[in-house]
Image (cartoon, rainbow, N blue to C red; front, top):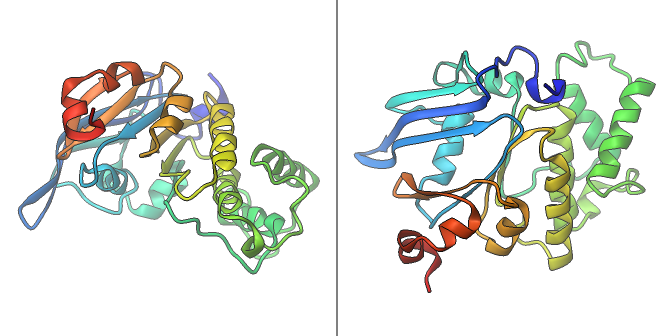
Length: 260
């Protein structure tokens, strides 16, 4: 198995990197998540779609420890119980999350943003006197090419386009070598050209990381799904699951989300 996928301390011998069973989250009596079951395979790129209020963001909050379920189990690999871990412990275990709005250090250069992301990984930089080694500089160069920002490393992040900021934030997550990437509407607000390049980027990451993408742009989902599994959430539960073609033809999905 690819070491980049397997990760440190993450037991994925049963083939799943993430396993949610009967997860329920309640806010003042309202079930934002209702007995949700979901499993993500090692190296899989899974798209999650559904109407607003379907529970997509709450699901990500549960995975990252931001929200605690009232019942159910959530495992990262075979042994890490996410419901008993703090947010920082989950992040250090190898789960990286990107929110819809890009959060980069705008007064720092592109290179410095990636360097700072590396510093946040305590396995790489245990002291305040951290200096980038040639090997780590090579890693940054590799990420710069991957996220389409090679040649922009000295530019202030605040001067980047919206799409470029999104790519930079993905690059910052990659610097921390996550086994599981959670991406919340990664192409929201992007130009058509940026959306195409983002699809290319995620397709390049396929198999090297396990990736969960929450997205409303159906053309983008179709481009990155590539015959893989798409999960449709509705009212906090899985409404349908299958290839993009299968869920698009599902009468229940058409009725509650896609329309005719």
